[in-house]
Image 1: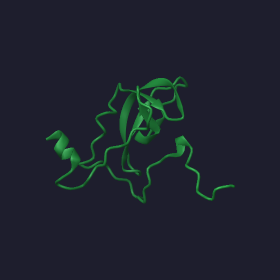
Image 2: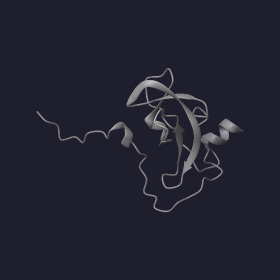
Image 3: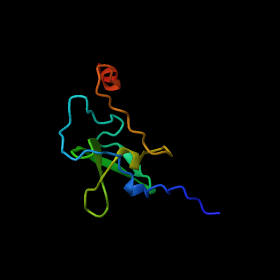
Length: 112
């Protein structure tokens, strides 16, 4: 019996939901996930056979999220969102830490 439930998007199309239409630079509460720093070994969710290093961390001006540029054998430098990556040695996609725009932000508690 076929299911009418929508199928999940392919792993390379798991973009964070956003309704933002204007570009925005990161604010003081927008901090990249410290688990995904330059040099960290990660695996692509859809291609977990090869560990790859994070080469750069950049702000995505329209998704209002950080993206992670990883090394490839093809010579180009693609970026990925956190939930498209797995940390080396783990079996699940990275769950990006929530960034709250308040005085009680988790980021303030971690870095204060």
